[in-house]
Length: 286
Image (tube, rainbow, N blue to C red; front, top):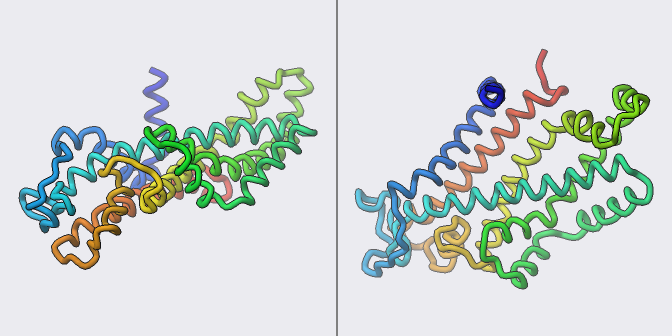
C-alpha cells in the first residue's frame, strides 16, 4: 500500500540520523504516555490533606503535592493537554504563516506590501505581554483557544521566512518553464513551490511546538490562564505559590514537572536538528 511505503520512508528518514532518532523516540514516549498512561495511572483529582508533600514511595512514585494528590498521576494526566496545545499551535501557525508567505511572494505588488506591513507590526510588538493581556480578556476553556492565542504572534516570523524562500524559488528555471507552458498558478504553488519548502516547513513546525510548550507553561506559571491543575505549567504555578522550595520532602514534586518539560524540549530540539541535517542541502554530508 502507498501509505505504508510513505510511513516506511518517513521512519527510515528519522532513524537514519542519531539525533532525529533520539528526538523522535522521546516524543513518541510522551505520546504513548498521554494515550496509555491514564489507563494504568488513573487521576481522579482527589485531595488528601493528611498526605500532602509525601516523599516518593511505592504508593506515590514521585510523591504528592500540597493537597495530597499523586504527582505522577498528575503529570501523566496533563501530558495530553500539553501535547495537544503544542500540536494545535504548530498546525495553526504553520497554516497561517505558510499560506500568507506564499501568497505574499507569489502575488507581489500591493498585496505583498500589506502582508509585509502587518508582518512587521507583529514582529515589532513584544509578544508575551500581549499574550498575557489576551489571556486575561479571553476565557481559555479548551486547548484550541489556548493554541490560537499562542499562534497570534508565532506566524509572522514563519511568514517572512516562507516569503523569502518563494521569492528565490519563483525565479528558478523550472518555475519559468511552468509559466511558459501556461500551467495554472494553483499547480505551480501546490506541485512545484510547496514541495520544495516542505522540509523547511516541517522543521519549523517542530520548533513551533517547542515554543508553544514554553509559552503555555509561561502563561500558566503567571496564573493568567485558568486550566487543569495537572497541566505542567499549572503545577509549576502551584509549586511557586506553595513555597515548595523550602520543603525537603517535596523535592520530587518540585523537580518532576520541570524535568518533564526539559526532556520534552530536548526531544523536540534533537528531532528538529536531526531532520535539518538530513533535509537541509547545506548540511548534508557528502
